[in-house]
Image (cartoon, rainbow, N blue to C red; front, side):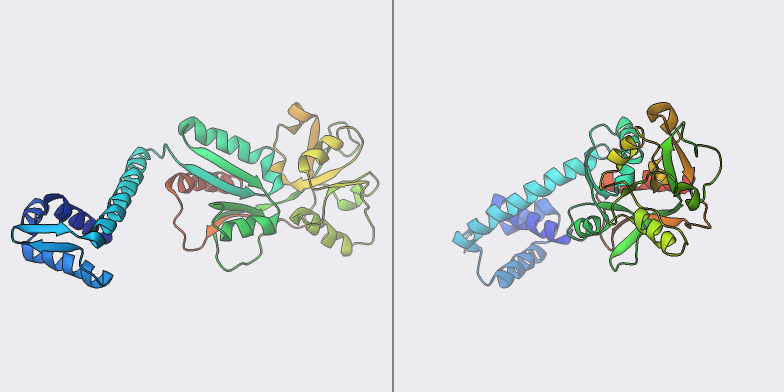
Amino acid sequence: MKHLRLLTYIDEVARVGSIRKAAERLNITASALNRRVQDIEEELGTKIFERLPRGVRLNAAGELLIRHIRSQLADIGRVRSQIEDLSGFRRGTVSIACSHALAHDFLPVEIASYRRAFPIVEFDVRVAVHSEALRALVAYEVDLALIFRMSAMAGFQVVASAEQRIVAIMRHDHPLAGEGSLRLRDCADYPLALPDKGYGGRQLLEEALARSSFRMSPVVESNSFEFLRNYVRFENAITFQIEIGAPSNLKERDGLISRPIDPRDIAPARFAMGQLHGRSLPVAAAKFAEQLARKLESNA
């Protein structure tokens, strides 16, 4: 941070009132320090010091500048203190935009795991559809976006990705709650509770149906995966989600079963975690992204 060094030089000259004494304290030559001062004055287009017989003194312009310099130095001091406290990545805020499928299980589990190691780190999580998550990322409102069926977008840098199957979710005593993969045609005879058409999983389902000779009409549609999963507990209905949103403990916890849809009907699609291209993530966010990347890759 060369500009910070220059600010420190000006501050020291102002404090001791002498370029020679300031140079001695800064361990540079008086002529080099005088050139730095002159460079600043030339850039500002005005003098900042009055030259006196035995030193220098800030003039009105210099007084304005020194207040700004000391404010800047104080700010950088606070940042350095926070960075030092990040040894072990202990402090910071991680802001995330994620798809609804991750909000119920995957992300809460991962955040809780991270905070057990780094309890001072805070999280700001917004659940958003694909387009909203990308907008928040581009606007620097979030550090990371976790998106299913990510299409190519300039500026989106993929940090980690994994293929995700579409799964059918139903009550554990549903007639289709067996083993192995499930054909879409088998689901057509039962009530369907579907996410709305803005979600990637629903779009994959619609594309599969467009290629098929049968139709599937929902009895319930919602933009809430939590609602859909709760709904199928009370009717012999089926809902669909990507597998990362359907953990293995569904039966024990909610009385639900998930069965993957046969890839002949719906091929897996990619789920991606990314950041804005060229942006350096805050340390806490970068560390959390590493954790999520390991998790995604282990489940790939």
